[in-house]
Image (cartoon, rainbow, N blue to C red; front, side, top):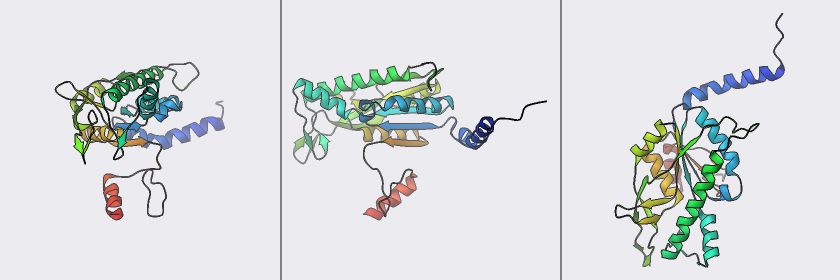
Length: 241
């Protein structure tokens, strides 16, 4: 005579049945996940890798766009470079650019290491996450704005969507730094928001997810809005103008 299922088994079956529609809905979808360098600096990225592993196991195509502000600030401190901001944007001169390059390299290596973990008795056990990065972002200089020369600070001109898609089709997680490159080989320091948004648009991503220190979008009563469609976002912008 078969034993009656335990409460734990019943709970799992109930959870799995509830999750099934989401598995079918997002399998094969493309998610662009953007987060600041604070996530890595505060030790929170290891927890995030568990969520990324779940998404990958459900065959969600994942693109990660990271920031590196605290790491850049630390490199500047170590090299005696004074940060300069104008119009809420970093002015990237030659010395600052060297710090930007070094900081982004450190962040990328640390993230790749954490995504490679397969510790037994952990959520990463059995994970097989392959990470791909490259020169997917073509950028142009911000130039002179209101009399301020932003030098090596740039903005996105084009995203190599086809190159990213090829790697996603090979079941790789694509990791993008907030750096852009010009056809002449120049390097530009871009913003996380610009790179992530441009990437999501170029890929026609199903979701663009920001993990930031700021409160995010708020409704008329000051309550946090955790999710918005493009139409809802435009309506919110119009209501605040």
